Image 1 (cartoon, rainbow, N blue to C red):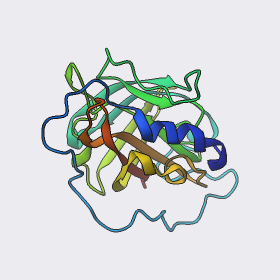
Image 2 (image 1 turned 180 degrees about the horizontal axis):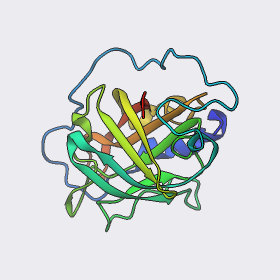
Image 3 (image 1 turned 90 degrees about the vertical axis):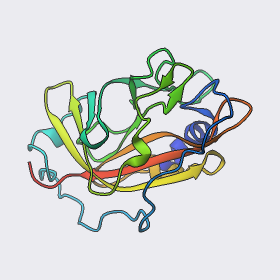
Image 4 (image 1 turned 45 degrees about the vertical axis):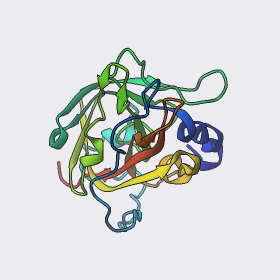
Length: 212
């Protein structure tokens, strides 16, 4: 989706989602790896009609929603469902009573098609650990797989893991247009305030994996 149209909704995402009603105790949540800058990959954009790396030719021509997310290194094997916007223009998040569920922002790219496919998940809820509890431990090179409704699986490789204050959420980095298929995973981090919200967002950037 165009970056300009994402600004308001992403600001809302950065300021208040993916953790609710938690007590301000415990150690701050920080990413395990802080490496080179999260620059975009240097390969050339695909030409019209060309197959994207790591996908069958028809994957990049059909929009099929994601139904499951697998991240082997951190033991994630979770259902995915669509989320959109609330009435006030903020981004929906997975239900608090389903901390195992991942939300796919349905107004963005579908997995395997050009653009960033954005998946949101809770870090913790009042029920305890949630689906993205181990997300801060990811490192560049880790594999992320997204199964689509049409039965195909799109594989991505982590490029970078970044942490940002929610007041400075990186709108363009997460939701801005890209010429190739990319993936964004978003959860909470930092410290828990007295309002029960985490101070930061953790963002994983991943590119379509080379090979089948």
